[in-house]
Length: 276
Image (cartoon, rainbow, N blue to C red):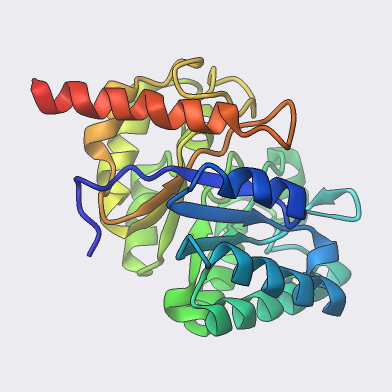
């Protein structure tokens, strides 16, 4: 069983590119997350992903597969009136769930991304209807994926973690949640109070964290300590039974220094809290 003493983990992220994976593995991560693209869910891509998972599993057992973020130049919205996009979501999620089952790993699926309110209104008629459409999809994948699937929050109004009433609905649906700290902070317009309340409310359902800083204005994916998130407040509110990675934008995909320095930063926060 995972414990407060172990958490947070050195969690690193990479694509399925062998050079990126080799660089991460030299750092001996305790958690590894694969960033995938549509190319990774073709038959050849799935075979390559399986081989890369087997390689990582030689040293790292806690592995998350991140469902593709983009498709044909746009974000992959799981609730959409685009039939072709819906077909891609169905096929890709089904394929990656099978990989997760076969390899004893986890699949992360986004509830939404950053669809603007005007688009939501045009497509669904209202934000409430858009949320209902997202929940219907998440219910389906919860039932299909069981303990192999988790759902990540977004900046979009259709799947944020900033609304206590909506959070209560998510808890009632018994979802396994992935929590991106920066997404909540941005959706909360830079409010650490909203972030803290959200972390506290949803902690029992969170199984995986994307720990990342932000200025709270846009999707900037900053190293911890370089944004405006108050990590000394955040740290005690995290669920120590979850896993985590540091989802930091890298200037060079073959150099994970910013991810590793973020882990060192949070370790210092943890140690200071333990002494107080």
